[in-house]
Image 1: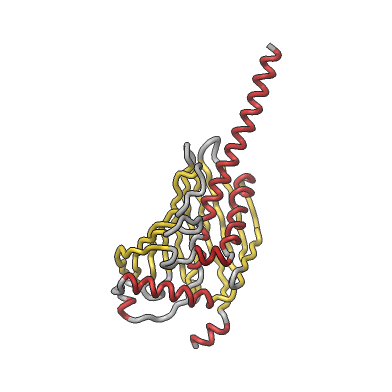
Image 2 (image 1 turned 90 degrees about the horizontal axis):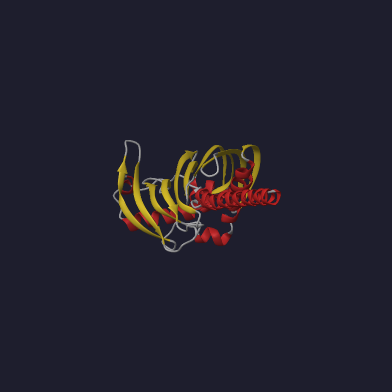
Length: 274
């Protein structure tokens, strides 16, 4: 009986460790997936406003013209922003086996063109497992996305995507071209879904998409909604909401709020627009 009891106890300990490791692996795979969401639109962070013709503003351009304007404006915007600072609030909620977990992280960001981002963590609370294995991984992957080869491979252009014009949405204030985008290759920084392109600024104002490449067997589906708002002459990320469904049950919901932007425009670009 004593030997049997020891064997049972040993089995329970081993099973417990196995479950914990499985959960940690699952959460790490969730991290890999939600990492994609904030950075699949890296090239869309920079959006100065400049005037266009009345036809474009009314939403009457052809698909080829919309895409050409979007790509051209992106090239201009890549030169326009010298630096910016801001704050983000990350909120991650996991519901599933073996229980529910929550975490929050507040971060200050300093960006300097063309490819430097410095993150300062102001505060953290909640599950250490989510903070260390998910939220910190988000910051690491954003730095990875800034590398030159990743910027090229994730750019929103006809090299990386096929575009289809769905229609035009008009409001009293502004019009948007609604485009379906389909990646030409399976890259973790690309996505498939729908984008809303401002008909005046040719800046992406909203995205509803999923990653082009499923990062893990553990990830069943991930849905991303990203919105942008004007900060001075620029359009900047305002919110990211990513819902990830985990295979065999469970769901992770990531929400990122962006605010307190302070932007500095390139002196050369500013001089050209005066």
